[in-house]
Length: 101
Image (cartoon, rainbow, N blue to C red):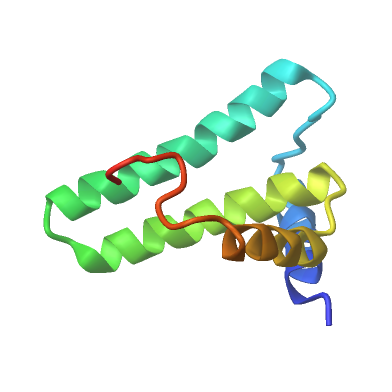
């Protein structure tokens, strides 16, 4: 069942209805969409710094919404790609890249 791909298309539709029609063939607009995802992560960090865990969750949901919107616009099969990436991550060595975090 392509749950995330369907959600991504619904999010894209709602976004378009509200005037957010991203032309992702324009690299500057694509970069803007990525920056907006980043801004939601930054807002989650600020909420955490303020001790507001409820707002952290809300901002992380915004990250998911913006990401799914962009993935729909990129015509990505989200469910398929997510399952592929999970398999890749399963087969990676412990702490691959030798980073502490």
